[in-house]
Length: 334
Image 1 (cartoon, rainbow, N blue to C red):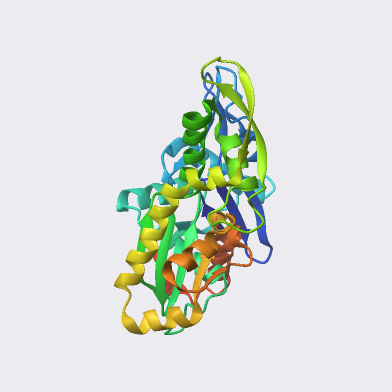
Image 2: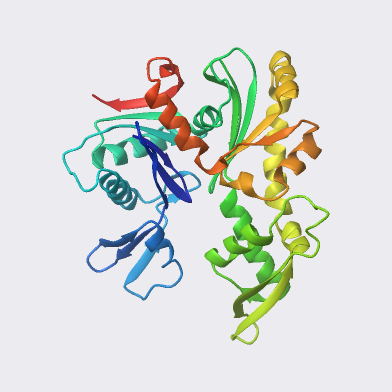
């Protein structure tokens, strides 16, 4: 099994079957009995809408496990779901993790997967997995640059010969963009909105670069008015949303520029030839490829299926285990 254990979504790949599960990384817990009531999509519907004794949690923050027990429960649930409830299965699992995590955080991911029933756990850096999933020729001695924008982290990496030459991981990604929209709504429109509403605004009218046809995009946003304390509807335009996301986007652009500055000249020449690959859920933000291209002067391509690049990469590694064994950054188990 290959797992992309993401801050926002968890995807599971099973050898021979392809991607079999794509669910939000959310668990709804009953606080009294400490039992999970719902996991995945069902739990996500409960975010911000639960009664006092039920809490909807996201066990991963910034790409790493923030709540160990809940993460283990979630993994167990997903593994069981994929195996249709059979409990005696102990699969070999490949998990994609951010490249900038510490040894302790790596250990936490391995332990959670082993507690959830894995026989052997292999860890692979997300940018490497995303590059393999996006179809980049990582085994060849040519430079490939990938930007993987997930929910909690943005990974920028230059890869060659199955290894990472340079990588930078910044904990600014999809969640920070949604948070920036929430703060903007509060500051400018005095409107308090929830996590899910902010994400919906980002998906529907959010953009990173002005496009000729997006000036008239607008959306009605419902939330709680701070001054009157009553529900209120406000219309926002896509230009405002672009402005509100400018700061977190500039952090991502700076990380890309820093990585390019440190790239060896031969690999830099390859990158200019081939362009930069954009993967991860953040790659779906309108105009992000244009913005990065405008700032760096290099062509930017968006992966064919950015959301599942990492999980497809873990799957390819599983299926070509002997050829791609060098890509792992850690392993545990038998």
